[in-house]
Amino acid sequence: MLASPTGRRILRDRPRITSQSLDLPHLRTLPPNSVGGTYVAWLDREGVTPDSRAGVRYIDDEECAYVMQRYRESHDFYHALTGLPVVREGEVALKAFEFANTMLPMTGLSLLAVATLKPAERARFWSVYGPWAVRNGLRSDEVINVYWEEEMETDVDALRARLGIEAPPDLRDIRKRERAEKKRMKEAAAAVAAAAAAQPAVASGINASPV
Figure (cartoon, rainbow, N blue to C red):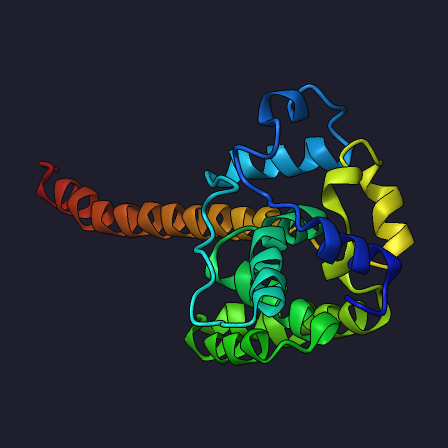
């Protein structure tokens, strides 16, 4: 952060991202494609608040403690910027991006959670979201240096372009379509099974009919 003029301003001002510091009702009046509008819509969709992140403990250095607090409080802006949901698969993808972008050890350790993903999710991470995270995390500006409070009215696509971040495939939509397909296949299998069960009954009725 010290290498960035904006990062140095953040360290000097030490703003906090909380329900008290942000005017959420005002953000809901901003255009849907603004940073503030995108952020608050993401909060509402995912059912979280700016206060969902735990406070920093066990760091004695005041400035280092603030950097970690800023990182935690900015995390939901990274979610909103990328569109990744708070489900485990989305969190792992975002942590991979954060690690490539910030090289913070704690974000790298979080990637061990890849092992806990379901087989299909894990395959999708290695083929889609992992490569996206590495590519975008390494080439983009460091997101810890974004002064989010000053970007609320900025067009979110313009901010992505300025930072050098491409939006990943819509994970929530992919998962929704997968669930719908599984439901369709389950219903189709049930219909086939019901039809197969009905055939012997029909045959018995035919055989029992008088000639």
